[in-house]
Length: 334
Ligand SMILES: Nc1ncnc2c1ncn2[C@@H]1O[C@H](COP(=O)(O)OP(=O)(O)OP(=O)(O)O)[C@@H](O)[C@H]1O
Ligand SMILES: [Mg+2]
Figure: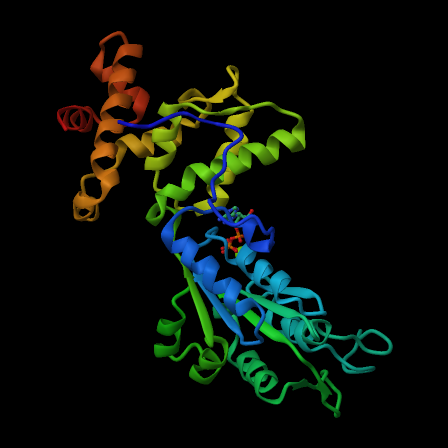
């Protein structure tokens, strides 16, 4: 099947040697290379940026890299719009002045917008922002100033906003849940990070970088990944994307006995999901995907391994894999 074992040192990104913040974003897929190149180009500017992508695809790591390479003097200030109730989010973002409300801190408090002056304001989960706050944020982007709660005089702020969302903002706009004018303000430059299953060539480079990181962190000496484990990692559908991959590798490293991550180090869940993949329409649409034939071969091999472990008892093998007997027969034929 042409899979070779990967052993450290492993160079996943054939890029130039000038080190910068984007190097932390490991990728060899053309789509991610393109995103990184564009992000490099726009990082020095001041345009607002919108980053879309499923959970765990790297929205925050990209936002931080853009900030770092922007050379803006101010800080990277992160606000999670989904984690904070609306009333708190308002004072968190815009701050308040002395006596703005009971319990307000003496002398008032600067909001995150002010703190991000000359820096970057990273608004995570922007799709969750309430209509009222969307309006206030729109004013900030138009007037380049903010007024603290309870205050009368506006303060000038120079901020670049990077907003992130795992929702379909355009759809939210259509549904009237997100202001179109704010959408335009934020969407000056936009990036759509593809899920990991749509750039499978990045899986092993990221896995190897994760091994390297944990080796250094906890003094382990895992040297790589076996070809069988590589097959499974490349075939899994990664609903949690890179974050899930990092967790799987961290977990697997606990079970390494031979220096390599092998299928035995991976959770049964992962293996079951790879073997049990239904031949649904989505799957067959991918028939010309180069991974498709490989997937079938990997599924078959895992099943044969299980049957061997079960000493030829197919019912037992199916049970071990958590799939039905008919699925087992079907996949063996493939
Ligand atoms: N291409 C990559 N190379 C190396 N590490 C990555 C890459 N993409 C993501 N990561 C890592 O994966 C984890 C998840 O990334 P990040 O927090 O940026 O995702 P996110 O899109 O903001 O997720 P969420 O929507 O859940 O907040 C982080 O630990 C991040 O450093
Ligand atoms: Mg995030």
